[in-house]
Image (cartoon, rainbow over all chains, first blue to last red; front, side, top):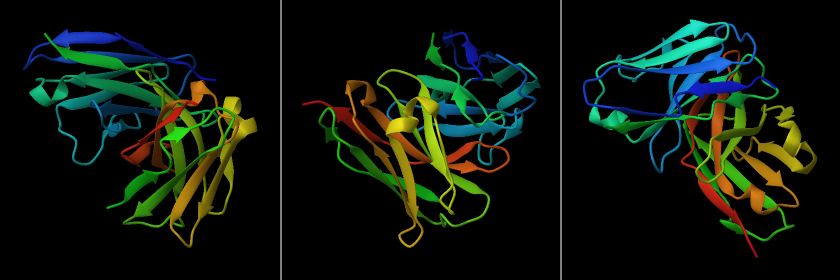
Length: 109
Length: 120
């Protein structure tokens, strides 16, 4: 199985800050990396697929990059609605099984 | 737009069978290019892929669950289902259904989820 490791596990920031979340794969997954946002009590929501393609309707302050084993999700100019939220990466290079990172919680400083 | 909705009992006794259904609206489970998936999230934990099915009935299961798991599709009702046998407390989780996009294999959209508790 391909293991996905996110860092940090939690992150404190302020409104207007720029933050970066990292996701590392245990082997190369080319650009088969997707990012999700999960707010408390809600299902995950797709933010980015194919490492860098923004899902329709997702604000442009979310940016994904990377290839191979190392990927990042950057949120520029954090908004209040971005906090108290988990962010998960998911690899889709190997679909048996599909695996997720353990999540990163973004908190308001 | 496609919407998914899970349904099923919220409480299941240990050793019994967990059965959930996902109803799809705004789209068809028979559409080419999509798989129909189940994912679960243990309380306070991350996401675990369970399995997915194509409209023709081809299934893919996560190995640790494979011996207890069945996923089926009913194209006439535009829904798909999960059956997990011999449940234990470790199967207590929020269960989500989601559409898996072929080729890129990302999940979108997701159902709102249904909490299943395994307890006597």
